Amino acid sequence: MKMLWISHLLPYPPKGGVMQRSFNLLQKASKENEVFLCTFNQKAWLPETEQMLDAKKKLEKYYKVVEVLSIPSDNSRILWGLLVLYSFIGPTSYTVNWTTSKKMQELVDGAIRRYCPDIIHCDTLGLAHYVLEKESARTVLNHHNIESQMMLRRAEKEENFLKKLYFFQEGTKLRTYEKKICPLVAANIVVSELDRMRLLEIAPKAEVRVVPNGVDVDYFRAVEKSKIRHNLVFAGSMDWYPNEDAMVYFLNDIWPHLKNIHRDASLTIAGRMPSQRLKDLISLDTSVQLTGYVEDIRPLIDQAEIYVCPIRDGGGTKLKLLDAMAMRKAIVTTTVGAEGFDVRDGEHVLIADDPKGFVEKICSLFENEELRHFLSRNARIFVEKYYSWEVIGKELLDVYGAVGK
Image 1 (tube, rainbow, N blue to C red):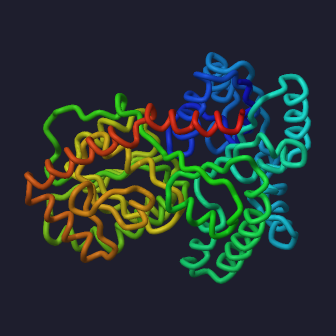
Image 2: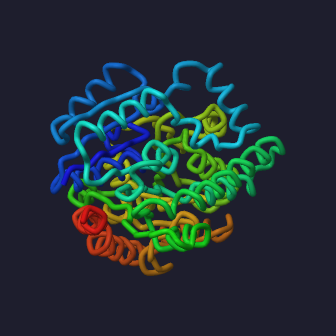
Image 3: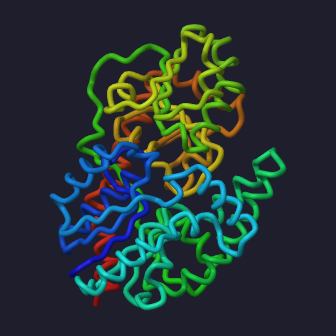
């Protein structure tokens, strides 16, 4: 079959959650379909023209056509500010306005005329408007998370009144949009059964299928080297607000208590674009390493005794957790961090939702090598069975097969 894939980012290199999902789903889709990719490039991910052209060249090895446009508001802070203001006072959400482009509409319309695709894949909610009027019967809409739920959760946790109001209004607009749009497409793809239930609560008549996030179990594989005693690691892009919030929370509320018990404990935080707030928090603490962007995260994960995931916000499921499980890490996470995965506390991971509990779980792993090995072994078996991209690719192709009949 022929497939038109519309994306809000250039999915290469596959580093970070959304990039990993988009790239790997595209790879699986291209095995049985001719794929024509129309995509925006986000400067936050690929800021230099050379990086963008290199990514485009790499993707052209897999897909018939790769067309790339820039996000309009990426070119001007003034334009972006006006977009934020309009999204606050206007009828449509920032999520939709941000990816609205006359050039993209022309590109999509032209691709439909030239290639006559059997399936159209919109890789996020904000892109659906490009095809819905004429092509909803063969459109698959991917949800990396339930946008309205994530934004309303963010509003609930936000302390700044103006931001709280903005996020609440954005979440309310998104919920109205999801209720209207999701029943119109042939299929909605979500990352977990939990997100499926959330979306059906909003749009009961929508067709919703689960295609989970996954992990490359051959790439993310532990190297049996000695670990750094009492070393913890967290990996995730620091410009993604749930990741920064997680590390600020960990450093303020958990780390001091842990250091009182285990003075030799060390922490590695790996991820691009760490904020000044985060840098200031660790400026006088030599036991915390803030790496910034790392080309290959595996050695840092491999050397640690424990992977920590103190996520308190966000949506969807966390690919970082799958990466760590594939590398046989003993993991301490929050309920939100493990959200959407059928993991069991004490069998695959340890779960704690308050500072005291988090410290206790970390200490129990520091002091019990047998428990670390038990969790790490179960974690690897779990992802191999349910979350390898080979398994997930078959589920994705089943959805396309049903839509393309």
